[in-house]
Image (cartoon, rainbow over all chains, first blue to last red; front, side):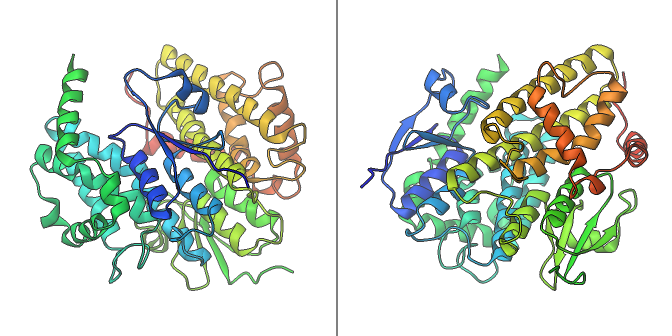
Length: 220
Length: 232
């Protein structure tokens, strides 16, 4: 029997890395965690992700898989006997799940940076863009507990790591996400009741302090 | 045995490489469809309703199901509902992940850099972007060598996912090369990709969907009007 070796190379604050942690924890896949110092990247990272030199990277039996959404699909397609499945079985539902996950992935992080790294007008633009994204996504939950139905699915896992950043966005942008998107925040709290999510999300205050430090670092 | 044309509709515009990409797959899988041409300077109600998030083409409408935007998502959907005719993605999860990685790389680099080149007014800026484009094509040459493993296509003996994902940009690549007087694929730096481009241009299923220079020029003029270059 082949012994599976799974390594997650990540940086603690990365929402993209948290996605992979949640996925591995949800399926109960044993893995080794390697923290990468993004301010002093190792040569190991450049061998497993030569094109982008970024985290997260999943190394499965010495073969690297890069890009968080790719990794989520890879996990779902490789460990097919482990539930929950992150993607539904119907092709059209799968396509819709991929669409929303891709939308969140392409837009949310970049727009949110305007809130905490921008000043004046740019912050307002960032806040409006983030709210637009969150409201559009909120509309897709419906009556279900999760985007994936009764269990966490691709869209849940893609979005929930950003919950750790809500405090930062709200503090910099001076707004309340709960007021603007109450259903979304209710969904997030349901997600946090899952052990896989609670274990994998960094503390919101730690994130806020880290972003304050980063802003000082970039201001030099 | 084709599919009746009323089942599948594709909203598109001839000059969009992302639309062409979906057309390649529909052609490879012998899927009949109704093509609805969009004027991007004056978007239809149908397009705005079908893709409220991005308001872009392509959009695929299959029977009465909610419309699907985004070319890569459409391709995976077509591959899943018509798996028996010319499969596009491989079945091995690791190779699939690798294919998706490079598709994402291509989409974040190729057309955005062509657009950046168009929008940059000054010569030094343009030279810097040309250099980036050539670095990208160099990386793609290495990727081609790895995926093709001596065979004619990224997909091996038959056209696969990355052949479609990159092949749709060939019309624009020639256009950009001609207008900016440089080679993106050449015999010295990217010999295998250069040979590959000739195979794609002449492929039965693909050649009719690659837009001609007049279509591209019209689209280029529209881009210059609605998304003009930055002030020098």
